[in-house]
Length: 176
View 1 (cartoon, rainbow, N blue to C red):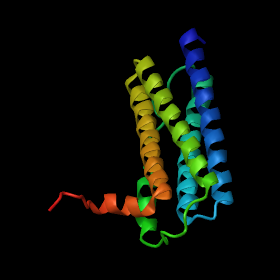
View 2 (tube, rainbow, N blue to C red; view 1 turned 45 degrees about the vertical axis):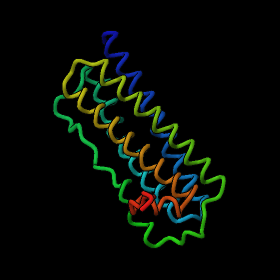
View 3 (tube, rainbow, N blue to C red; view 1 turned 30 degrees about the vertical axis):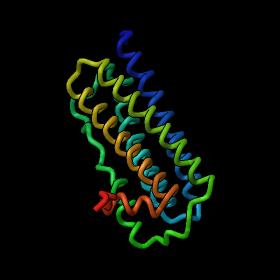
View 4 (tube, one colour; view 1 turned 90 degrees about the horizontal axis):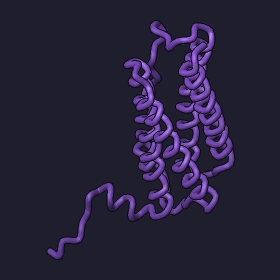
């Protein structure tokens, strides 16, 4: 196996470790929180991270066995539903049931995870010349970005539910 393939395998191992660690983090906080939005958000992202892990594991096994990026392995992951979680739940959530400090800290940590994951997959995408590999890592980076943006939105909701609703409704103060 050449050095480039060894580098790919190590990169996939790093990605596997990150995805597993993130999934465990999200599941832990989904069990811990009593906030319905937090629970749904953490569970949804944990499922997405598990999907990423499974695809990466398949790629890792194939790369180790064949010594090259697989040509026949589907390089797709299911679309994330994370952006829909907030939209669906805000209608049924009491704005008086604020998230606790631990929920907000967990979301801040999660935002950092997703920011780093997005940067990592963008880096892998730039380091390869293989078109399929580029597309796969670009897809994973975009999903991590979507997680990050949804988590930021969740954080804003936790921080100031009334202000979040005002922003969603598009109310502005125009002096009229």
